[in-house]
Length: 289
Image 1 (cartoon, one colour):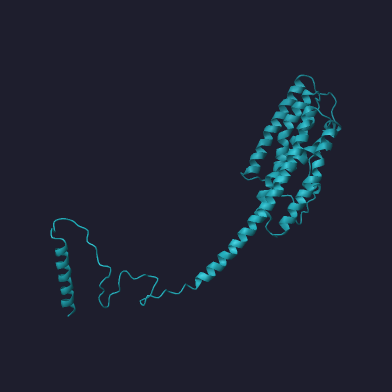
Image 2: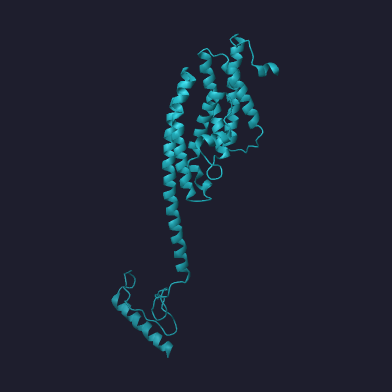
């Protein structure tokens, strides 16, 4: 009976199409009716996957609420991290500004200005730097254990600070600024917010880049003993760096640059000696050697 019913429907549709299109060889647009005939036992292909057989909407998956809760927590964490990073960057910008002022003061040393006069003006920014690093430490205390997560936001500024402090320390004492002394000058507590070792080492490498220019300007001004003192300092510093097992990273590249600084100072010292401008007397340490 079902086959007879299907045959009757097919014959009716065929007759209707022939009556609507008397010229079967021509192509024409045929509009299908809005309803679709569905046979018993076969689901309609136009039934939505989100609805059941009765047409009702399927209930949401139980994991949806868990995902929403998790990503809501992620959203709060990222918002808090972004606001914290903005505060850190604002302090880092102030540290950079203080570095520029200190650097501009130290540039006068290349113009043969008296060392005490130059250092007195540059030391005025150390107090400002102590306050800024204190602010930075307070911000980091709000997220314990996240020091190295945000460390990159003030790393470059810290390296510049170390290089300037080390150069000032050498002008005063002709010796290297130690890691503990740098932390003391900046008011840092190693147990809470200390000076990263790589930042200290890179800062010392930056300081060595300024010494060849200082030597040339001092010799031009008539200080022919300056190349000898700087050469001794850089030789000892280079030997100390060779004790470290440095990887092929930025610190390694800066250490390689120190060799060129040492070579430049050696060339100046050589020129001073062959021209007979070096002092005849030697220090007690060199006489003992």
